[in-house]
Image (cartoon, rainbow, N blue to C red):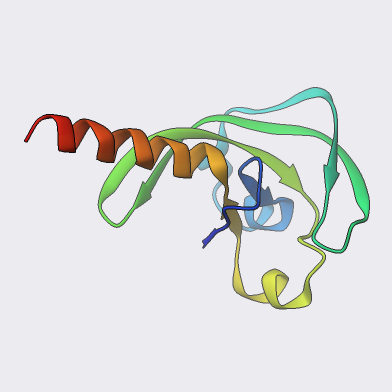
Length: 104
């Protein structure tokens, strides 16, 4: 899992979904075509979306959605990461931090 503040969405590789239990990803659905700009500037289209995925990072659980892509284009990312958590996740964490500070 890679945290990327430059990613406008959360992304997951299709090969990871194919290799793991399909039951983990019951909510794979076709959506509208989305254009995704990759790190090298190229654009790919996808219409696969995973919605309401229970995700856990460092013991904290949350639900999020992922756009499904065939690759991350950067070879180092393809061999080392199955998903990229972008701004939706980081915004969620910022809100949680903000609520924690207010409750002190």
